[in-house]
Amino acid sequence: MSEKPEFSRPMALRRIGGQETAVTVEATEQECAAIARRLGLPKITLFRCRYLLKADRHSVVEAEGALAVHYTQTCVVSLENFEDVLAGAFNIRFVPSERFVEPEEPDLDAIDEIPYEGQDIDLGEAAVEQFALDLDPYPHAPEIDLPEGLVLSEEEAEKLLEEGEQDEKQNPFAALSRLKPGKA
Image (cartoon, rainbow, N blue to C red; front, side):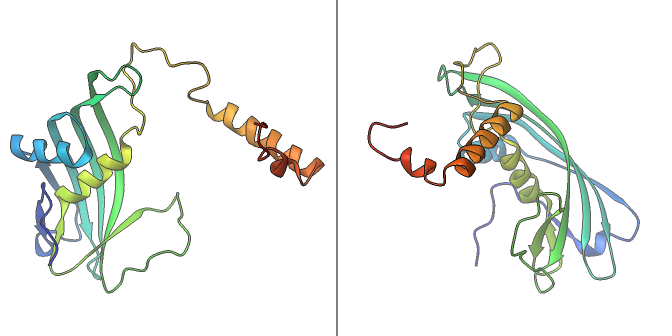
C-alpha cells in the first residue's frame, strides 16, 4: 500500500459528471509546511488550485487547473531566501490505471496523464506534482545579477548547438579532440 501524500484531496468520480464541475482545493498551514519539506523549499504560505473537471463515459477525467502558490525559495547565487509567487494554468487527464499506457517516447505537447485506481482521483497530489514541475531548478532573487554566461538565452543555446554541429560535420573527430587533456 502506498503512503498517503501530504496534500491529498480525493474526489469521487460519481461527483464529476459530463458537465463541467468546479472544485477548489487549498492546503492547510500544516500541509503547506509538509509540501515545502518535500520540495526542499523554506516555506509555503499559500497553496491553492481551482479545477474544472469533466468525466467521460470511460471514467477519464479531463482537468483544467489554475494553480496559485506563495512560497519562499533560496537564491542559488546569494544563498538568501526570497519570496516568490507562482500563478499558472495547466491541463491534465486522469485515466483509469487499466487504460493507462506509458508512452515509449515523451511527447512534450501532449496532455499529461495520471493513472488512478478505484473510484477517486487525487486533486491535491496532482496540484503538488504540477507545482514541482513548474519550480525553477536554479532560482535567483529578482535583484541579483547573474554572472555573465551562467544562464543562456534560448537563442544563445541554439547558436552554440548549431556551431557544435557544424564543427562535427567538418571534422567527425572534433568531439574527441575536446576530450584530450588540456583541451576544453
